[in-house]
Length: 168
Image (cartoon, rainbow, N blue to C red; front, side):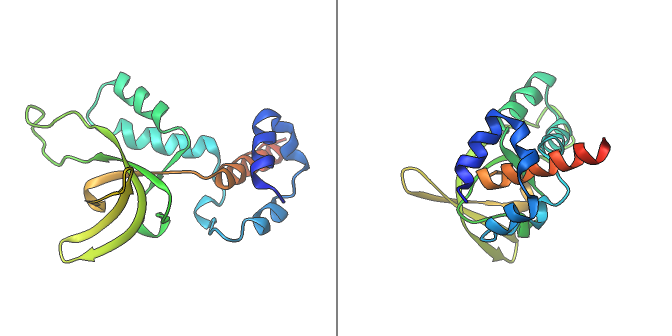
């Protein structure tokens, strides 16, 4: 089963998802754990991203801009949901309650996740960006958004189709 072709065809014609067996699709993508996607849709993923960004202290224009830049990304709330080899974008979370000293939250591309480091002061995510440069950030101090693979997006589209068919 060529997942890339199915994904491209499904983006062009969403009705094709009605002919795809979700169980067969999930079996074809066994190389990746997908339990974190269970009963989620592309819309629910987008809503999670919007909710997380709108809770930051930034203007509605910035919220809209960041949401557009994060299409195809999902919010990572737990370490076990973070996958090695996939790109992440991050936004620093500021605890300072004084708005005069708090800078505007900034969305930044951080690279592909290479490893996790468990240290005394917290968990660090080690990423590699191009050209080969390694850097790390503290997971608890940032909102982390990880890029969805084609397979993950296809699964979300299939769950969305199932949800629609159950409503009718």
